[in-house]
Image 1 (tube, one colour):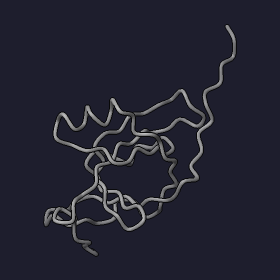
Image 2: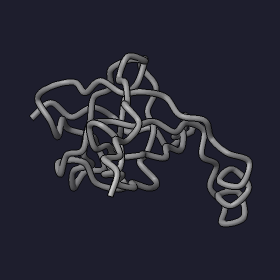
Image 3: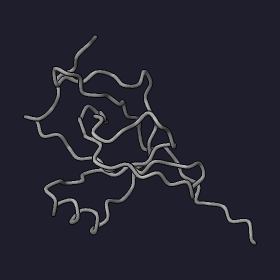
Image 4: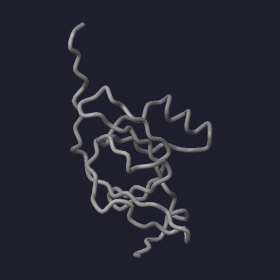
Length: 116
């Protein structure tokens, strides 16, 4: 059986912060560090599939495989808030990654920062 290596993934497109929503519907830091990410293409199939269920995937990224991130966490990239709509682990890459689909929080749905 041949030794097959997966695609090498890079994380040089930016950094993001991860937050969770508290009981008062505000966001508080979930992690005390930023995470480097790589951008992915939002495919036409994924775009229209999300639209069919009333969502709009506006950004697709990947990060190194980790267990600290969950769907519906809030991600802040360049000052904009996004909600994690879907997470898909991919262990076939080097290093293993999480593919993350993000929806933009409209201004009226953006969460306030709560500094506990």
